[in-house]
Length: 589
Image (tube, rainbow, N blue to C red; front, side, top):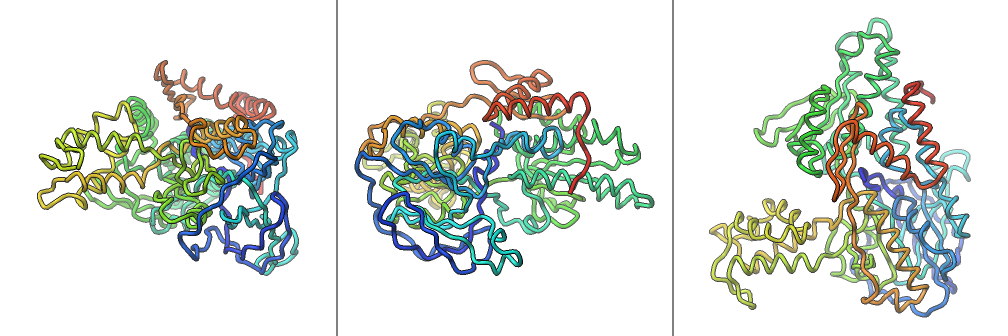
């Protein structure tokens, strides 16, 4: 629903480092060999790949037991593991540096004390132990698709070294597989904006929620001290959320509730006039990806609640105590105070997926934003041995692209050879493609991205030939995702992939066959909390629900959608406790 798996949030943390030399493959698939690697620096981003375009990946063969290695512990991975039948002929090994599953849609609530952090996490070993599978708390730092092997490194080397972790040799090992399921999610995208990494908080993990909660509480405590100048009060109590998607909107809403329902009762009233909550977005409405009526309602609701909506603004720089932004319409540059800035704007490809792309045959991965898969979520170029689900994957769309070409041919009166009677200008191209949006919704994204690409493929008269349109269409499509990066998509993909593995029952030919199955995403609705017990809900085939009624649906859904009965009771108890007694705003180190 309202989070990228990570939707929001990442299925697994991307804690990667330099590539260790690949050991020789073990004789038997699934075996694990311990290797003492040379000391390596701890880094968030992997080193660039040394080579591009590797040899063809050999297929897995036979019908005996197969080793399936799953990377990640987010929505895609947990759904796959829970849905895979224990009786099938698979030996499953899950590898993730995070030993728990995080229910990402309630992360904003955990950041403000509406629910407790422990209530929205589930130990990954629980479903693993129930099915007799294996789990390794480690980061995958390299993949060898040809040798069907991954190189892993223990998540925390300081456990083995009491002193400086940087000088500690990492515990490394390799794991062989027959099939690899990649569910590592995505990482935050700063879009090259200066100062984001230095002065803004990201909001993807439970650690980010904990940090946010501590920061907010500490700022109010500092503001209550004697002799704090008014200018310092405004700086301390200015909160800026960058990005008005579901995550940013819900975080701003939960912060608003915390301030005016709990802080207002326990802190001096003189502080409230200095509190300022702002949300910045490049679009003209918040929740712009939702139905227009929802976006308009949510924007109006925020403005009436005195949450400052800075729309049509592009962030130019994040400073230590301010944010610089540019109006996308007028071009005017403005700087606003920001005591605490939170970056909730966009994701990009996990560095591990970049390594996988560059180990596959040249030309098999043209889309550099996600791992391209076929209809059964098999990574293109892997010969059916690697699967990808969640935020790190995108499905190919040959039918929608063929429809786009057909629409252009009709509008430009082209023959089968691509010779057209007329060339089309930009607005005519958009109008032609709009005729296929109802059947192929993906074409709407193509239309929205034509403005940036049209000039490069048009002739001197600002018109596009059929060949120019094909080139532009390919360029635009390679930069788009087939499905939104949400928890709902990752969950359905994980469940489908498990059903596909169950049906094939370790038969390598069926797992590689083009005639077996097809993943079809079913959108079950969108929800977003907007504060003051209100929410917006877009339920297909039913209605758009707004206000307190939407809030009841949101709370009910987020409670019953937990991955275990334990979490359902914990979240329900937290929501009741918050309603009766308020949030716990104490700060613990």
